Amino acid sequence: MRRTFAYLAAGLLTLTLTACSSPAATDKTDTTPAADTTDKTTETAKPATAADYGKILADAFRDKGYQITDRDTEADEYGFDATSNLGRLEISVETGNAQADYNEATASFTDEDFFEEQTWNDNQGYQMTSYLNSMNTIYNIAAMDTNNNVFYEIEDIAEADKDQVVEIMNSIGF
Image (cartoon, rainbow, N blue to C red; front, side):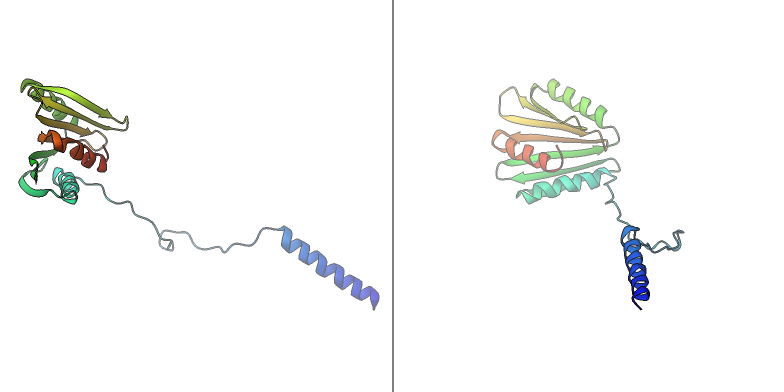
């Protein structure tokens, strides 16, 4: 009887050690597309039009207390005014040719007697430059997002409003 008990104990010990040392069995399931029911996360769609990007910027201004008035919307251009107690800003957003639009705006500012005041560049596709008029009273900002090919132009910024406008632009990625 002792011998039978010893064999039984040895068998149970072997079985236990084998179960602990081998990887756990995994369930095998059909992984064909029809049978694949795993949850897939979807990426949030990026805005595609100037109006989409413009509305994001308008919402950022609205969140800071500005009154927003839409001016015009086209397929590749969206314009609005943002008004606060410091004045009215004219804002336009364009898609499709960001670098060319940026270059055109900066040349236009220079022709209108504005000089480059400050440039922000994050080396990740965002660039923004502020321009100050010759009387040191009004700023304009030209900005571009080369990753998404979007150009932003903000005109008639009062000196007291410039830091807030830069903060708003930073909130959308600049």
